[in-house]
Length: 202
Image 1 (cartoon, one colour):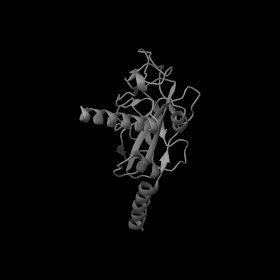
Image 2 (tube, rainbow, N blue to C red; image 1 turned 45 degrees about the vertical axis):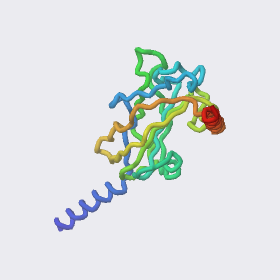
Image 3 (tube, rainbow, N blue to C red; image 1 turned 60 degrees about the vertical axis):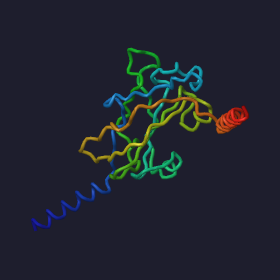
Image 4 (cartoon, rainbow, N blue to C red; image 1 turned 135 degrees about the vertical axis):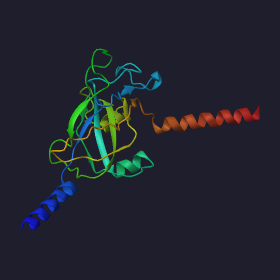
């Protein structure tokens, strides 16, 4: 009987680990890898913080996760998404050196409880955008020509309570700015081609 109870306990614990709802502690206050605005004035939206400034309470950040793997492009990662957390505000105020600007402490993610994050290794990414009551989502800010940006991919495995949630220490610093329209890239390409042609003729 004792052996049976022990076996059932081990099986139940294994099942909880495999299928339990995990969570991570979404923050960069542990690593100190602050998020900032691009230092290129031409790519920093006016009125959304000075170029090079760290992000403050007018910005939001969100965690995304997909099955662990190597994603060649941003589109491939987004196509494989299995979950995303809520938008989290940055601490402090942009440009306020006395605050914790550039840092955020989002707490346990997923949130609210019940959002699926079964315990497994995930490839994760954070994306930030200018909010200030105008843009509730990254896509809205992107379409509105506001400052947006996203981190490099990192891998993390969530845990189930009572094990402490692991902090997102793999999240590296990144910047936000205006993403040029595809037509801007096309014009830049045409300009470069014209310059090359002109040099050859000379």
